[in-house]
Image 1 (cartoon, helix red, strand yellow):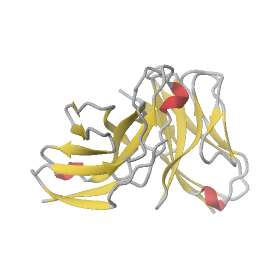
Image 2 (image 1 turned 90 degrees about the vertical axis):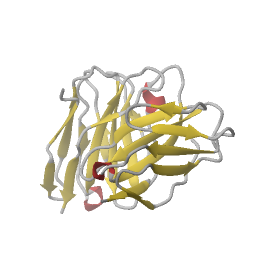
Image 3 (image 1 turned 180 degrees about the vertical axis):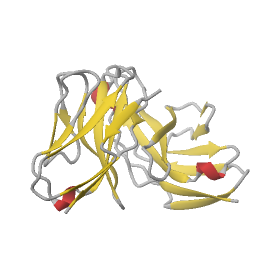
Image 4 (image 1 turned 30 degrees about the horizontal axis):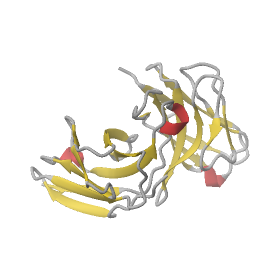
Length: 113
Length: 115
């Protein structure tokens, strides 16, 4: 059972470069989410999507964009990376049934130099 | 969403019950309590959730006080593999999921299970 697959596992990126973090789920969940995790700040929601074709902003959306062309994929794009975007990025998905828990991937560790 | 308060860290002896407290004194009547944990270098893992009744599953038990202002996650027989950061979250759930399922995480409790 794959669940949530994130790629790459880790990446070192020069500041100013464009980067897309990939996220794919095989659970047919309608909702998907991107979080970033930084030491001392816990997990913070970047963007989310209720269903294919819709997206919304979370707590810290600036500098990031997302798209949801289909149910399975939810890529996160950094158009012009900055060092403050160095973080561990987690993708998650959930069913839209009342109370459904989130299922997380194992993260992408991104370092912007 | 209601804010939660958890101790920064706790220790527990292997084989003993681990009791992790969480205060959510501003919780509303329609807000659920969720618990997740994160083992080093992995994504967060769902443990359990509840509204006002105590809940139990194969991983843990959740005890919610009658006034719902606090709760306790109980791992009945802690093992070394239970060493992780445990997050307590409260969230409103509406009939339609999606955006209402987005969870706001705090900084959690680091549970260290000692051999």
